[in-house]
Amino acid sequence: ALTFSKCTNLRVSNLKTLDPQQIHIVIQDCDGVEASNLLVVAPEKSPNTDGIHITRSSNVKVHDSTIGTGDDCISIVSGTKNVEVSNIVCGPGHGISIGSLGVDNSASSVSNVHVTGAVLTGTTNGARIKTWQGGSGYAMNIVYDNIVMKNVSNPIIIDQNYCDKGKDCQKAASGVQIQNVVFSDISGTSATKDAITLDCSESVPCRNIILENVKLSAVKAGPKVDAVCTNINQTLLINTSPTCF
Image (cartoon, rainbow, N blue to C red; front, side, top):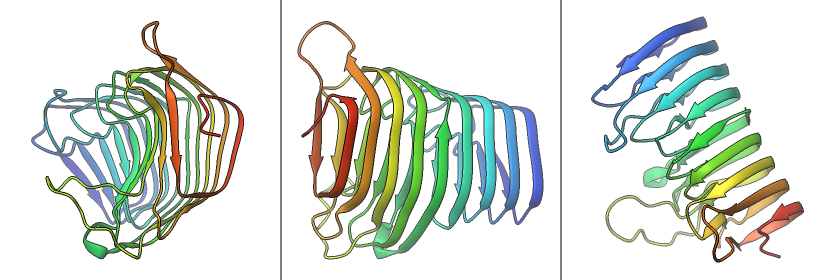
């Protein structure tokens, strides 16, 4: 619907976007952006309708907005650093995502991202970092905290084996390094058995992943939810349920 390109000290507020064909709002090649009091609406089954898509930008603040889409509520992709996201209502949608990064063996970088004060309802993912095998670069210094999940599939997910090409993606010797990531003070209910998934790369394992004060349970009374953790170096879980260690 709207693209803001090569802007400095941009302010976007009190805006409503409804049923675009693809992404609602794109922020690209910008420095110093504040987006607030936005209402973003698209049908749950409308593909590629990301709410706010941030690429190759720095010093971006997004806050006090309501987003319901058929894709990521907010997507933060390569070349982006110093992002603050706060007080977001997300749902439906695919969550608040870093990535995808490293597609088609590309170099990608995202750093210094803080997501806080979000409420996600009925989304297919919650706090998500997704990277392709075969890429390079990094996603680092990322914090998700003070978040409520309501009936969310995959509430916390790191997926270094992301693949949406409709066929199996080949394993690769390289990958985007994910390191220094914190998930803290996150509570709510999971619509899937795996409430926490840390699916990291064999060749480039995740480093320094911290989960603290995370409490996730099943939507309905029944089997407990699980955590699945693979290929992680230096993981710390404090007062977290479920746990994979």
